[in-house]
Length: 349
Image (cartoon, rainbow, N blue to C red; front, side):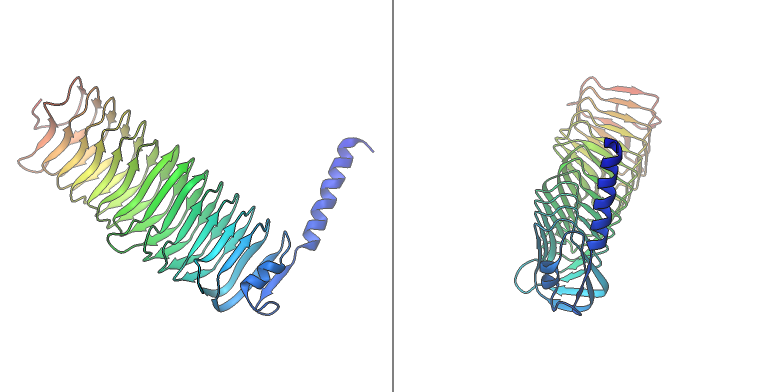
């Protein structure tokens, strides 16, 4: 037998053994608590939790390839901790659980998926710390004391199809790390909708509504923010001391202050953004060496564009301020900016 066939045979045998040895650990039919089911599980097993109320704190600690899945409405009421923790996890899947008065914590783990879970009334909704390649999908949070979704010191995580509802004055999402993907989420209420301090983030196709400060806040790093819809927030998007941020095809409606507010950022590229009914300024920028092309500002408040930065490039933009305002205003502080083929009527340039 040649070496390639031998390797293939070993792999197939291992797969068959793993499949045959995987078991469902049933709670409460076989184990009285979720934690008891988890403690009994071997790699490849699934802890299947029947509908009911479980007063306990569950921890998967160094339990690779162990999954937990709710069957029906499974409510976890934490007894003393946060509710559900995956610690030193590898390739775990958590699905269809509900925590009341607590949150899900993924700590120092990799390749963990949390799907179709809910958290309400806790310190957070979902918290990811010191982890890699975590995926949060189709989860929901409501009225958490701090951020609904939070990451720190984590990389290459994905947030897809989640929804959060927050009280005013509380952050919606606070995401830091590198290589994050945040897509198709719905964020409602709170002080900040989505606060990011990530390198190489992709934030796309999200919907943010009714936020009291900033729909999306980009701090100190770079990434691409595309095709997001931001409605009825005090401000649409702010970039603060960010570099090489791409703002593409975002739709911002009903901002009570600024549509896009760019503060001390460098190299921003804003393309094809649609800004409607920004009550103060459509695009306010004090960034340097930034590019603005094909942006559409209608009913832009007192100003369509308010420019304080240097060495910026404006081309093929459309801007209309409200009656009595200026479509394009350049401050005396600005210098060496280029304006080509912009459709503006009232301007001080």
